[in-house]
Image (cartoon, rainbow, N blue to C red; front, side, top):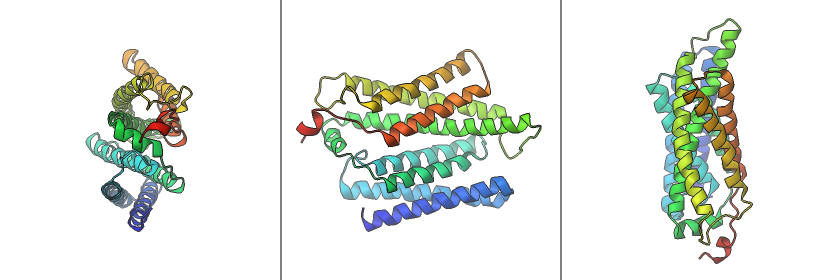
Length: 274
């Protein structure tokens, strides 16, 4: 890691942590000015993080998905951009409250446990369409992350209502329920396309395919099933129960484990690719 990369990552982590603390303070202590500053700092952290990724790609001349730190940074930047837009467009308050700690912990994990993917660099150079597969799958994960955040907000407001209280600083149940459904549907669409491309790659006759016991592919299926079940129950049957929101949360947690904790295992590809 170069000095410039270390500086950029440190600034991004500091911004994400500061934004998380300010947004938490606004929610707990009702300091409304803290929320505005928290969003500004969160936006600045995302911009710094994006600039760092761009500098890294220009200097290193490596594929964007050959290092877990770059993958995590791209995921965080896209998630923050889409989330802040949705928060403003749909007037869903406190969505950034959950995004900020997620961004901080995601980037911190990638910094403390940097995973180099040497096989990915050579494979992406020979099969660039695999980069499209990864990019589309990442967009699906962004939708899952945001739908998980809105599902948590929904459950929190529902819990308060059952206790006879209404938090006016949280969005209405109908708003968060609709946002969860749309975000989950959008993420599911992208993730399905990405998963389909991965399955085609898996059964392809090329050298650069995963081994039969590749856990990363198999762990994608439970996530897809959980979100598909939620969308069927919510969109087709019209159910609105709180239990459905737990499907969204569980699906995203599985996706996180698969993204950060599991690697592809290539067979012949790692030894024969230039």
